[in-house]
Length: 480
Image (cartoon, rainbow, N blue to C red; front, side, top):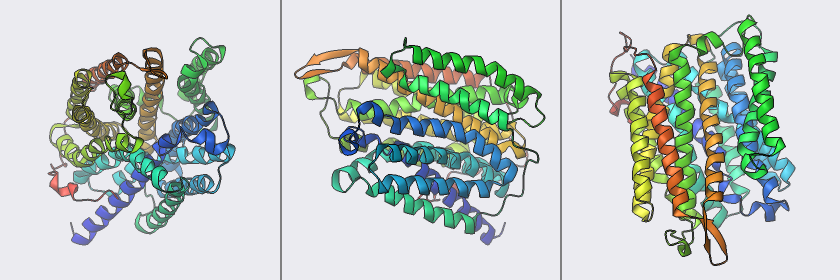
């Protein structure tokens, strides 16, 4: 392979991965703002919470839809359109403090989550097989890397400059990468002909909206609330109807026959569990270290310091993602996923008994972050081994969706546990140490469930033409 071609491939990977990091940062960047947004927008805390919920909804809904559109109409075309949505959403957030406008902006930012599966599909088209696993590992890990860095970055911005600044920076970076992708990434050569499955898209969107709104708002509305159960019921009734349509239409949005294969089905199940276990780490760490010292275990640290506690895990993901690709090429991505699930479970076992000292909290979070890096890197490789080339973006979109569902369920579970297992302190109440230990125990069991799911993924030898690429061959590629 010529050096010019290798440089071109590395440039494509760098640009796509950097775009993925920017998108992932946008998913969590409002978290440090939430306590202040009711005052800044003149709204209630319940209304402000929609700034997180709407991003989750649009990310879950549009990721599989845009993945399918990329397979059909051109991945670069759809990718640049998605980044355009991120630019518009960021401009709306930077220019306004009106809650309704901000919710629209966050909805557009959430739709940009499709950048990651589209990027992985482009890499499959443009890179040789011997570089595919390591490159897909880096691209997939951008979700975790961006999420880990988003909170501390946003906390620093909120502390030292006007909060609108981070959205203007996001708009500028998104526009920059949109232009670079148009110049660097070739047009898609592999496409899936046919018509877009509009009824299937509407059905899936309705199911996801009902399911995720109920899961994310259940703790606030009450799990016995008619609204909560009504949404779950609608989702449950629509699922068989949607499945009936998808199994009979000639060009389905989701090929259920492919999705039912053990290699795809259990990878997606494992992805949902991994998404839960990953998100529990971020949610609990950021809040745990901020708990007041009056609790007896809290450290009373600032938002900025709590965000900094997440950075080692983010660095671990950046460092280990190419290592994971190398390991998957040598032992297979199934082995990597099994190892990752075991590491995550071990990390939570550590966290259960070491949650009162800062360095042990960071160490436990780091171990879970390392497992997340391995898992997020292995999942797309398993999917790409099991689906045809022309379904890559759609299939990876579904896998990204399952991780989002896991994160939504995790958010509901963590909120419920911390709200119900409390202790009295001067001036009010706070979650007890036992509440955090319950969260860690549940997350650890979910990581074990991911391990068990991975056992059902069929063994598949590495392709004969695939050579093992040592980590050093890709670890020098910058992510930003």
